[in-house]
Image (cartoon, rainbow, N blue to C red; front, side, top):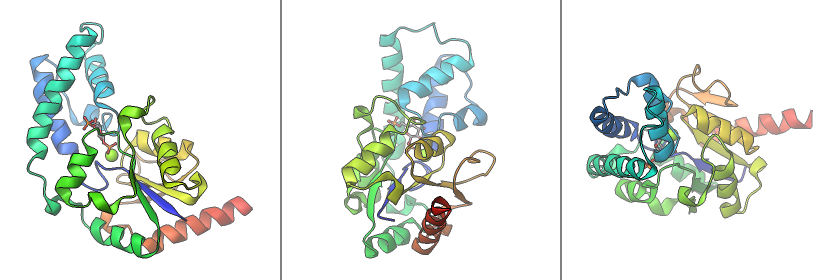
Length: 225
Ligand code: B16
Ligand code: MG
């Protein structure tokens, strides 16, 4: 085990509630309701794809031009940025700071593979941006999660083989992406949503180096037959 690639929203901090609030505000102007179910399907997917899924949910996908969609995405991001302006180190999810310290002490490389174009700003506000050896820029990745591309690029940036890297995710599409990248996947959250991951924890407090090492060693043994 040489590296860990972290998802951001839902693993390091809980910005999902702000995405939800911002999309609800924008969708209201379009006469569309975003419920919890639909919101779950927006986790891990890009801003543009999120809007497409919202429009599709109301059969309105063909009603807007590319320019109008761009404007709606910008409006959503303006609301979202207002909401995340209040983020501080207190918003780091429980156990994550200690977990990061422990991984670094054990010479594990750390990276961020988030679909969010706001990731650097969020990590800065949380005071942990410098802890990471790489932050993949999602704007340079043409296929979003569940495509493995963002995780493959993270491994490339960290100069590690994907089989020596663990990915941690809270979304269905994110787990699919990690698995397709040939990495070991750890899900944080509910097993009905994250059923395809190699290992699941209920919450971030349960993540530690020993557990990751155990999961990695077991997977290695399984591969060797
Ligand atoms: P932005 P993650 C994802 O973050 C969110 O889960 C998803 O809801 C959001 O649409 C996406 O980032 C893009 O975010 O609008 O800030 O570029 O879970 O991949 O860390
Ligand atoms: Mg996430």
